[in-house]
Image (cartoon, rainbow over all chains, first blue to last red):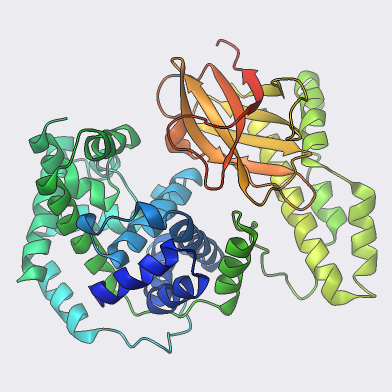
Length: 179
Length: 282
């Protein structure tokens, strides 16, 4: 992940109530998080609202962050995805999202942060090596917020099989991306 | 929970693919059963892998209003206000939004009576809405803002009434506890609770406080469960949806509201309980 050490230092300042430090974290990570939320929620207004909630949450819960459980970026993504999944489940639109094939309308590209082309290539290559059923299970969970039970219902595969696919798929992905 | 059980589920947990009760079990394992360096390392690895999936997306700059909203919220020390949706160039008249609130079937007299209670709590005010619409022609910018708020208000009321009309929805009135005593104005509130997994809290006369938050609790099996923070609007009204994951499991016996330090409590109320209300048996 990008700048873990610097992010940790910045988060220390957030813990002490430094709003400018939060703004710095926002500057670094909001474009990536917003892209993620747009992809998950498919509605710009919802994505904006959840992005706002994510950073307010980060401000309030900065003391709960534990570096031993992942980087600051991973922590922010966890918060954002958790709130997005809550929203998806609340609005009961999961199946609609799964079946919705149209892409988002082109959004304003980010100016400050250029995409990490190398990381994207590496990720695509890693995803490409996963068996299709493992990849599908991970994508349904990641983008559409489905639980393993719901993936089982959606795909017709036994729950135990889905659990195995999620576990093996993510572990394989982690190994490939770390290597 | 055994370490191996945690390790077996940590990837699904990091993906957000566990059911709420399964996720809670993993969190409890990490938080209350001592340090677990191996489990924490596995969680870090899984989270990094999950985070990396986002790198496949082209970054998209969010509109400046998002940071402005964050900045306002942390300056106030409270939850961000509900978003003001983009208005069309010709905003929908408030009267149209309010007209949509009338589809209550006439034969549902009992529900209609309950709906009146909801409307009182949600604060319908037709005159104000009309006044805001009339001002739109004279002071467009200011009125757009007011109309946006009116529309949000109308949508909230519609949402509350729709929930009320759903089979099984119960209106739980929360009473002062202790009655109107202490330095904190208690406000008043109701919970619209549907056992199929939805609950809305509607309150009025809640005074926003710089150093405290109002927090809704759900009492289940004699134990409190943090349900949601209750940020009041500028008019003292509260409209909060309880996250569905909190509502899974055994039917709650009661709801309660306490006043807590900023950010609320996770495990049990530490501040004064100001409102309580029992959920009727099915």
